[in-house]
Image (cartoon, rainbow, N blue to C red):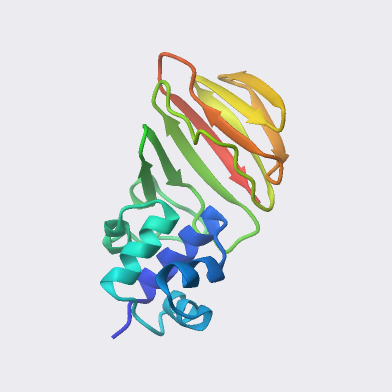
Length: 179
């Protein structure tokens, strides 16, 4: 029996990370068709496949096995229903959107003091913006460094190299919107 929930969690996270099916297939040594079957709940990956996919997508493999509450409504996500990811270095994300299949999605990111998205800038398709709910955010977009505080908002093309950090002494909370 296959786990369609596992496949959906893999596909959602892969899309959030901007990883192509071919990259996953190359990482686990399987065909694109097989990876597509996993994501559609038609085939089950091996333990080694799940571990390799988790490593590629930057999460612990147990993330895929963690049961998540299904939203009670297709248009609303209540706090107890949010899927979340915790990253190394003091960053956590909560998915605020009910579905990842829409034209945009929203995340609530919490950054501990000194936490940074990465040492190197990243790029991906789409556009993104955000609103600093609490704390401070230092955001690099291309060659520009922006110093943002609570109440500031921003928007940029995701194809511009970007990364960020919390330069403050208190946690920062950012509402992100990605298309």
